[in-house]
Image (tube, rainbow, N blue to C red; front, side, top):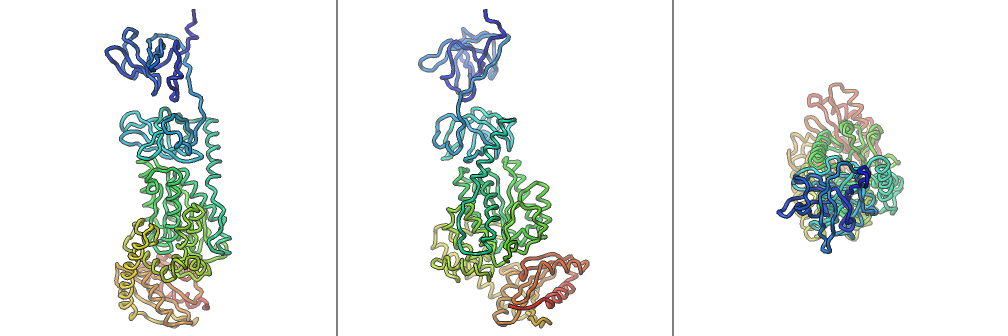
Length: 613
């Protein structure tokens, strides 16, 4: 007689099927339900049998464990069971031997049970199943686990865990999905092996393509390693389902830079197996009013990200800044982001401050390689976008030309980018598109206007609508600019500086329309352009000021606005001075009661700067 200590009770693994059940063996099962003729018992989620009422030994409730002996397996697949009572036994698990399937291969496995290994990138509880977003070395897919409606399945599995999942591959609403039979969290060497394997593969997969620049440029060539670094960071974020928040300055150059990257990232999200709307919840583009990352910006971004993390189980985002992010003015926001361990990468052409780099994982800036602001953010963003996803190049190759004319670049790259697309877009057409972007963004305020901006940039394959829209927007913008100039130009005050420059001052608070287009910054720029045309060959500086701010524009005076701001901040106690920008284009803020002192000190500094062409 067999010793009770040696009795083996088998437990079917989630991937096992009828072929793994043997007559004469004893299994641990779970009571599924009752009928007049007996009790149904599940051996796993896929296999069940019947204990005839004549073979029931004890009373049970649903979902209770019961030991059953397999009496027979019929030709139709029905299993006849008999309940057994065994006081002492050993449990031996039966697992179907299978090789883990890569997520990229699931499209060929529909209707089949597979085993996958990957990292949990998101845990979303719906009113029905729990949806786990899984990332492996090849792609991203969802796995649905159901216990009860709205009840969290596998609560031990958390964001970032390495897991092994067995389940059937299904297609729901044209999206692949694994219906989970079992999920186990990997630990110890198994977890480390899986993580090492996935990390190594993702590192290779994230490496950008080795492609040439759109135009020959020594500055862009020197920036290539850092652009590749940021492109790789972005690609890896896409492949690991990490949300990306892209913040950009709310002008034509900033929009061009951001939209080029937006096109690359959203296309890559769709190509890499994301949900049908992943390009909306995994990528967000948001304009920043100031040319730096303001506390208001980081507060909004943290608010949305923490809510998404809590409600939808998303990872915390990668923050990408374009046409801002390089200066001391960004530090308060960076320090706040650091509390939440947010990764931040910057693509900018403002004069950089070395102190910001300690907060950044990547920083593309032409000043780092001997260039200047003439290499615009739109040029940089487009080159990075091509590295992220080369397939979008035909759609975005005109964007650097628009950015160049929109930001009044005088770098040689401006002409090269214009020549690149001259057959499709003339210089005047590029200027009109840039103006349309500025005009429409003013009315959009803090909204990204994603689809509207795509129409303005002719990215929606509807050229007729694009032309009509540009015509309407440019007409509206020019009418409002002309109205503003008619109101403002008669009030411009002229002064001769000791360095020979002509200084023009305009109080835009009392001599310009408020709360409408063009805003004070662009109003000052339009005034400056007209004055430069009136005084060809002369160095010209224009200051548009209000109660607590001043906007500066210069032609022919070698200023350094960020340096001026810092010097004034130290020299004028109680001035409350801040600001910055490019070397010869920027802004300064101060307290209203110190306006006269700040403006006079500013003018004195400008008059001490050298002039030249």
